[in-house]
Structure formats: C-alpha cells, structure tokens
Image 1 (cartoon, rainbow, N blue to C red):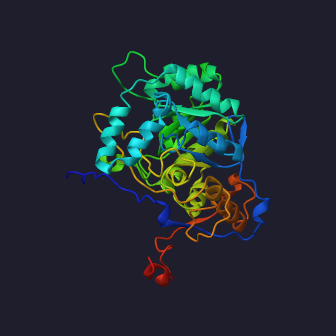
Image 2 (cartoon, helix red, strand yellow):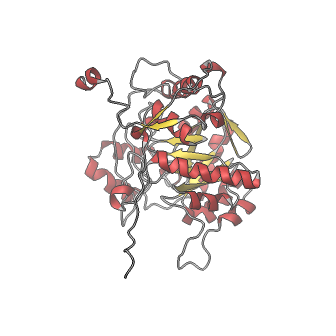
Image 3 (cartoon, helix red, strand yellow):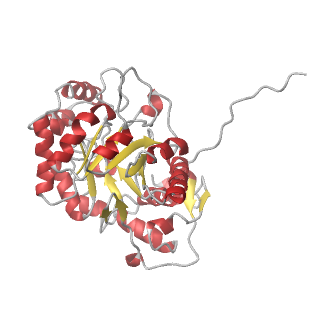
Length: 380
C-alpha cells in the first residue's frame, strides 16, 4: 500500500494589525525607562532609524536628526552622490505624475556615482559632529565601503531586498561579508532578511546588526512583483530567536532592527515587543518638513531599469521632525511623538529597557483596532 502524499505545510504569519501587547503587572513612569540601544560600540538614544532612501535622508536631514539623538542612513548610490545639486532632480520627481515619476527616476539613476561626492557628503555630516551612517547594495560595497570608511563614516549598511551569506552567482568571487567585517575599520550592518537560519548565518560573519523585513515598506512592491515577504511581527520573532540563540552560544549580542511597515507608535512598540532592538522607518519621516522628498517617497528598487519593485507614494508634508519623534502633538492616531509612545508603552508593561520589553506578552488580536470603536469607524 502506497504512503499518503506529502503536501507543503503552511503556518500562519502575523503583521502589526494582527496582534496586541498585554500590559504588565508592574508599571513604571515613562520618564524612567531607557529607550537607547547599542550599535557597534555606540549608544543611540533614539531606537528609530531613518531609512537609507533618497526621499528620506540627505546630509541636511541626517544632521538635524543626528543632533536630536537619532540616526539617519544616507544612500551612497542615490541622488546625493550622483549629482552636485540633487535638489533639481528631487523637484522634478515631486512635480511629476505618478506614472511619470518612475521614468524620471530610472533616467536620473543612470548617472554614475561620483567618489568625490561620496566623500563630500560624508565629510559634511562628520563636520556637523553627528554619527555618520551610510549604505550601499552588495554589488557596490567592495568599492564604496573602503571609500566611506576613509572619509570618516561611522557605520556601513549593506542592504538589498534579501541578503544571505550563501549567494550563487557567475562572479568568480562575490562579496564575502566575513571578509568585509574583518577588513573594514567600522561596524557593518546587513539586511534584509526574515527568517531564523539566514539571520543566524549573517550573525556568524561578524556583522554588528541585522535588518529585518522584506517588502513591508509603503513604497516597496516586492511582495506584489516577486510574491516574497513575511509579515513583520512573525519575521521579527523568528529573527530574534536567532539573535538570542547566537548570544547564548557565543556571548556576542547582535541587535536586530525591524525595517519597514510601521506607521504609528503602536506599530513600533509591537516590533520591539516581538524582539527588535530598534526599528527603521521611511514614510513617516517623508511627511516632515525636513525630508528631501518634498512629501513624496519611493523605494530603493524603484529606479531599476529591468524590473522596478517600488512606486512613488505621497504622504504629503504634515509634521515636523520634532513633533514626529518628541511631540508635543494633538493628533490622536499615533502618528506623532513616536518616542513618547514607546516610553509610555514600556512603562505600562513594566519594562525598564528594550531588552526587558522583549519579554512582554503579546496576543493574537485581529479585532484590536475595531473592538468597541463603532463611533471612530463611522467618522472615517
């Protein structure tokens, strides 16, 4: 008698709207909690990173946010390093229709990256006295990472839609992350990934942190174009397990940073409870007066000439960097005073720091935003 056929098994995966945080048995005053985290040997006071996208970060934005205590990552393959005056291109993108915007971006990114501008942008940020973080895709890392370190960058991010240690290609010798981490004089952050095994293998190369998330960003269309991705709560939980097991076996703690898909303070808090040490966001920053995108935002793969995996979205300009991060605010939807939301949620759960916040209970709660909210829903 033949055995029963084996079928692919699916498990349920959860995003931010599917879960809720359970309050603790002890509460703490929000002003007594520590929201900082360690990246490399640097203590960052705000666990909210600004993503390395041209509409989010330019040197001016990075300096303003850096002086507030935050960290903004500059894309070394973006408009800032291709043009002496990138504002002209940014203005064209902002003025274009949605269909025209991608064509303009594809054309603009054909201009080569200039090493002199890479150094100039980094020195501008360093001269302002902030922590300087920069990013590049794996293909450009061998060229740009040493240049960035020489110019004075403090952190180097290697970012792609999906990053793995074991990559098969026709190249005789591709990027070796273990070699990069040994040879580069500054900490290396790598992403993105969404599962236990890939995260664990990345940590074994010596990276300083790992970015978590494939396709959740508001401007990213990888999930539609490629069909890949894992909802952020599940992805964060799985990758946090890799971090914790790696720490227990080696004694080296490698933070994970949940990247994308978060819009409100509640989303950020859920990412931290799921296991993130910090978060990286883009769209909320583009709605500030300080962002270079003029109220618009697009993904890093949008300018791809062969298969664009992003689109321009338009959050509009409706806040300031100060109100977004620190408040004060009159908004009741959680889109401002993000740091205040984190502090209050941690205090409500009795967590004195983010690593204690990881131990907070979370429940599956698909009705968490609609239960008892008939009047709010009727007004939308």
